[in-house]
Length: 49
Image 1 (tube, helix red, strand yellow):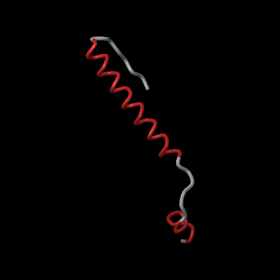
Image 2 (cartoon, one colour):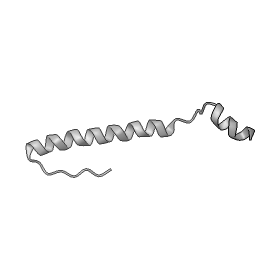
Image 3 (cartoon, rainbow, N blue to C red):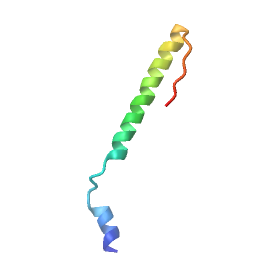
Image 4 (cartoon, rainbow, N blue to C red):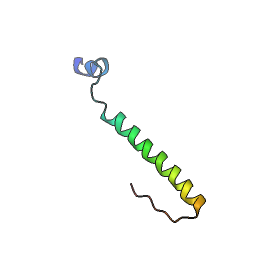
């Protein structure tokens, strides 16, 4: 039972998932802003992530 308690009580040093999510959010915002820009200009576009 002590091992399970340590998983809850000990702060985690791994933050890779949190950092990656911020990058994915940035990509989505970037794509949306460019999509709107291209749409207003009548350009054809495809985004592939």
